[in-house]
Image 1 (tube, rainbow, N blue to C red):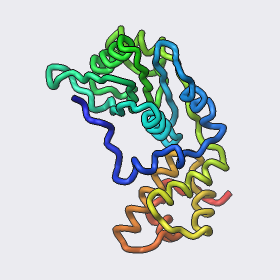
Image 2: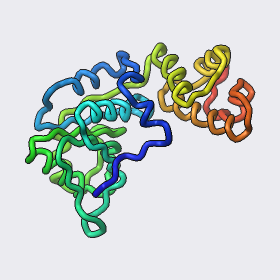
Image 3: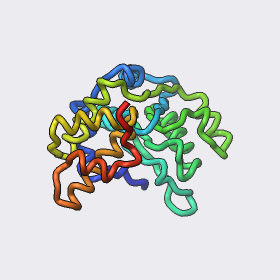
Image 4: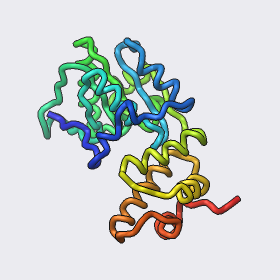
Amino acid sequence: MGRQLAFPLGQSSVLTAARFIPAASNVAARAWLARPQWPDGRLWLWGAPGTGKTHLLTIWAQQHSAKILDARDFVSHAKAERIRIAGHVAIDNADQAGDEATLLHLLNDAMAQGDRVLMVGRLPPSRTKCVLADLASRLRATATTATSEPEDELRARLLLSLLAGRQLVVSQQVTDWLWRHLPRTGNALVEAVQRLDDAALAQGVPITRALALSVLPDLLQPDE
């Protein structure tokens, strides 16, 4: 059996409905996920890193008692017993499947059982390379929705949420400065907070502008 998606320590408790920040950049994805049915029972959610895809996947899985799998862990049947799931399935990193046959079998099983499958990836099905023609055809026929890069208000709230999720206490002066100087992408915020947390823990110091300058030189943008 395949193992469930392994979250970094503490992340699974952060990826809850209460912690999700609704915004215009994720409204279409939320609308699709709220539907009681999808065409052929499948939905593909795609978008750039840091735009909330895995968070949405986790919320949907929690709401529908779905098994969460990471497609990168899929291996060929010759190396392991084929994964069989009874019930809904949420598959993260579906555009990076370690074994295409496993993904195809999961889709076939779900359709035969009348279960739903949510797939999440960075690329849409049309840009996902598949060797198996049957899988490529199945994915092209799958309904899709997407998240986009966060707007300014969401970026500000996301930065505070990421810091709070790691129980980091940072002055408003520093958070405001970080928000102004970090790239306008969700992935940059996630990367920055992780680096700051790691550095502060390793050095035993608080998160300051000086620390940010030392560990984020490739991310920080100059004043306009």
